[in-house]
Image (cartoon, rainbow, N blue to C red; front, side, top):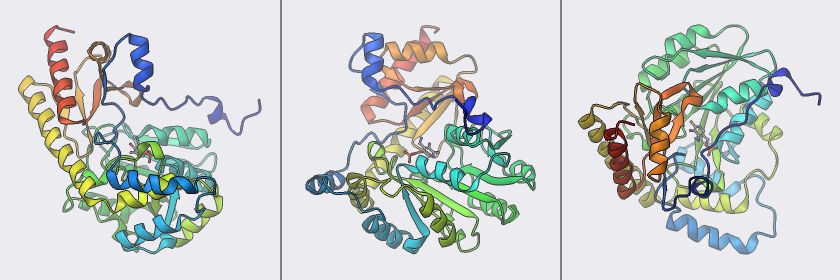
Length: 364
Ligand code: PMP
């Protein structure tokens, strides 16, 4: 087959966590818990569920191709205009759309070592050149990233909080960085986990849009809003940029249930607060456990925590699986000694901690 570019030929598919059923069948276990994909452990919120039920009779019709209701609700919440918003089938689709629309083969994309793997895949898939900047303390080294920008750079991708390490860049660091980026270089600021960050610490990315027409803020309903299975994300940027993306976007990329549920979830402050509160409390549980055991971990602002065993983590991952606890090995991200644990419900985290303590005490 003649492929679009050499990058496609060498592309390896994104490796998501395996579904629980598949793993259980493989291992001959049952009652396992999955703390592997940074999903919301609370499950679907009541308001989103009711909205889905209300939308069911309309499923024979196409969805609203422009997502009018959801965009209006988002515009109001974020104090932006609807022409600054684009909706996607998960933010993942929108990230790919940015590449598809703006990044040509041979151009450079700058991103950090140990960041969301989709940037590496999209860069390769579009035949662009990856400029991977070595991480600093497992997070982004913004000075080095700014220094890595050349005349061939088209896009810089930043994830804050970062996945898979949970590291966090402050407002001051980010705004200083943005001021250093030439205006012809686009910046995706991926805020998939931003709702978990305390409001006073969160960077005011939406305010920065007025100053930086090259900035693209990316968010999702998959994490704190609990809609990962429905696939809804959005980007906020300058209207001209959004208008180009909308021309390239597939018209019915967000389905009716997703649109209805996301709009309801956006208004479900109670659910959001519960999710964020649970995450905070349970994060503290993991931190206390790691500290008591002398296990090193990365301080995280997201809905997961990454521990570093300082040796190949595979045996511990396998042993945890046999205990019915599914976490995420992140060797594929270049961190073979680390495991990423998504914060679950109280009893799930307790079970994970007990399993980890058992496995480590057995000298695995
Ligand atoms: N960005 C980051 C940093 C993520 O961790 C994820 C989910 N793993 C996404 C984007 C994509 O999320 P979704 O496509 O579900 O919106």
